[in-house]
Image (cartoon, rainbow, N blue to C red; front, top):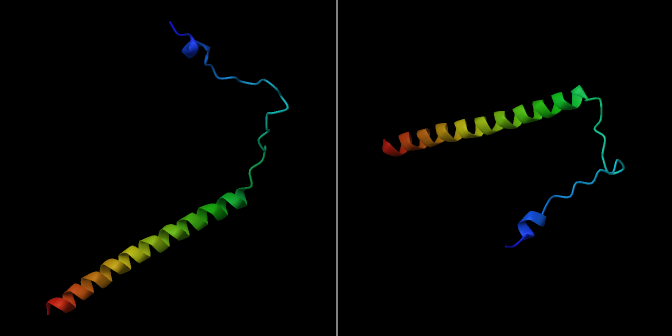
Length: 65
């Protein structure tokens, strides 16, 4: 039998100097700004898609008559 599978384990280092501490405070203004930028991008995408559909329908209407 082969013991390689049993010998392969993840090595977790319990060295406190390697741990990074998470910031205790969250800047709400930064989160609000990210949220507003994300909403703006979604709105632009939606507007582009809607205008493309409207222009396509208009072009098809003009071409059929």
